[in-house]
Image 1 (cartoon, rainbow, N blue to C red):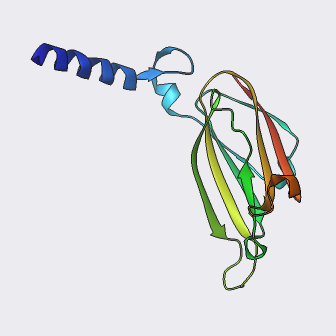
Image 2: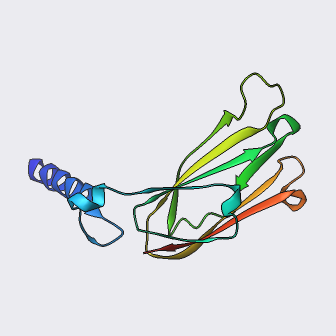
Length: 139
């Protein structure tokens, strides 16, 4: 029983040190990944990132009017959504736009997209007033 536990623990620790992007053990250079920040003006661009890089998207949303950005069909084979948050874009202004921030991690080499739609949840994405699309090439 003890031997099984030690074996399972060894396998778990080994997996923690394994880079799923390249299929090799982690090296010092793999710990130093970039953060690529994208905003509204980057809409429609093709971005090249390295496997393991973080992609941060910052978009203004009209929260006071009920509009928010929503990620549309995330490709979980190549990307992982790490976090999403909203911050006041301007302090002290009621009804001012809100800054939405999404952080993704590139997890597998290949091509994919990040698609987002700006709409009121009760109206559905068919009534989106704006769209955001980024093409990603994960190397």
